[in-house]
Image (cartoon, rainbow, N blue to C red):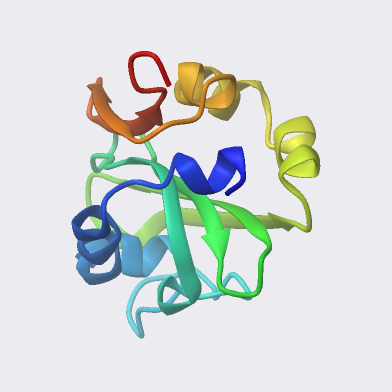
Length: 139
């Protein structure tokens, strides 16, 4: 099992993201609003490694993980106080390898993932509304 596979968040968090109203806009899956499709869907996400639920006119919604075809992804979206149909945007990127993901995902995401990058385990830690998988004690 790879380090990335060992850091997957519990299934209930993946299921929650797949059902979340706001993450439908992040992935461009809603027929409302103005966020285009990313080229991959929530249903294609096989493992979720970190997630943050945002706020209108506040922090972004974002998540990172692995798709069923093996690519690693980062998806992010935001909207103003009126919601997803006025001033809103989304972005998604994929990489073929974990190493390419880590090298290119950006400092902000790497910082938010924190300990999840070096010691990848399965303990869930919450920080400022985000959930990141980190190394278990003695792992």
